[in-house]
Amino acid sequence: MYIYLFYIICESLVSLTLTCFVACAYAYTYRIERIGPLSFLLAAHVRLKMSDRVLEVHFLPELTTEKALENSIVVIIDILRASTTITYALAAGAKCIYPFLTINEVVSWKKENIDTFTEGIILGGERGGKIIEGFDLGNSPSVYTEDEVRGKVIGFTTSNGTKAMQSAVHAKRVLIGCFSNISAVLDDLNKERAPIHLLCAGTNGVVTREDVLFAGKVVHSLANSDSNFCLNDEAIMASAVYAQTLVKQTTLDSELRNTLGGRGLTKLGYEDDIELVSKEDVFSILPTLDTKTWSIRR
Image (spheres, rainbow, N blue to C red):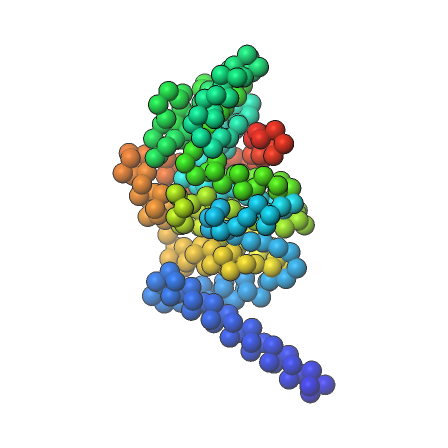
């Protein structure tokens, strides 16, 4: 009996030590001036919830492999702005969206399929944040209105979001996640038993905090559900980033404006997009990429 009690005490001390280490690492990594009680408890809770279900975050597509994502549930995250724009387009009645890596690919696809999709094809996307010359629409969610896209098929290419999708070619299911449909994403993931991977698109190979914030909120929400998850280091770090927004009690809008993507959009004159992107649960739809037809539908 005493040996068992000694074992329990030692295990608890080790767990507490690891939690303190993780919390301090967060503070150093993200230059947090102090670790408040709330952030410490959040870190501890996430740490103690680690168990049998796999929940991993990847800050960039380059930090994982197609093999690692095989037969799993992958959530593509490009908050500013591809994930949000895709969600808005499908909510506005677009029939489906075909994502492409390059401009030439999507232009050639339209020429080859102009007679196939009699309902009409429109091209959307961006390079460097700006609308592509000759395209119908850019990458602002607000321009994908019912008048523009209802019943239409969209060919879509962006600098980072559509590239991230390529990494999930062998996944069991590929979901498109953003703050606009976060509850729909969470409801779906809560029902899953397959490994879950949250794949952040980043910006030109650089980690972006807007994507990490969304991933962190998903991790935080799922880890506080009835199910247990085994988290990778990036998932723990993302959860800590999100936890700090709770501690600071800042708005999502203000957080997104102070990110790499947010600052970039502000310079380009797309400040209104940030406000739109920061609105949570605007839609209950869950855009899903069919890896066989390589098309996204609601």
